[in-house]
Image 1 (cartoon, rainbow, N blue to C red):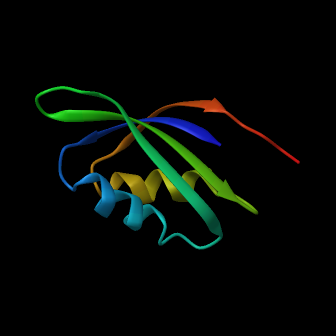
Image 2 (cartoon, rainbow, N blue to C red):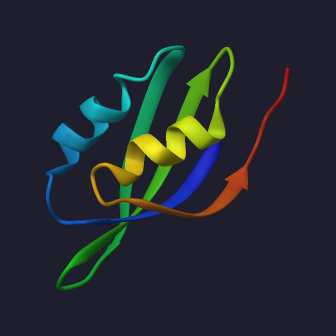
Amino acid sequence: MVLDVLKPHQPPLPEFATFLGELNGLTRIDVSVVEMDEKTESLRITVDAEHIDYEELRTHMAKQGAVIHSVDQVVVE
């Protein structure tokens, strides 16, 4: 799943990615900064997992002030 996410500058990117990786079932998190402004960062986040609980992921991100703008890609095998 590829997500378009907006987050504040804090926490820093490595800390935020590690925080996301704490969710059960996720096998890989790939976080890239797409754009920055004075207060926020736009991110492209690729999440690999056996099963993704979207609501749990959304709630977990919100704890760090991040908001999912859109789901840009989904791959099902």
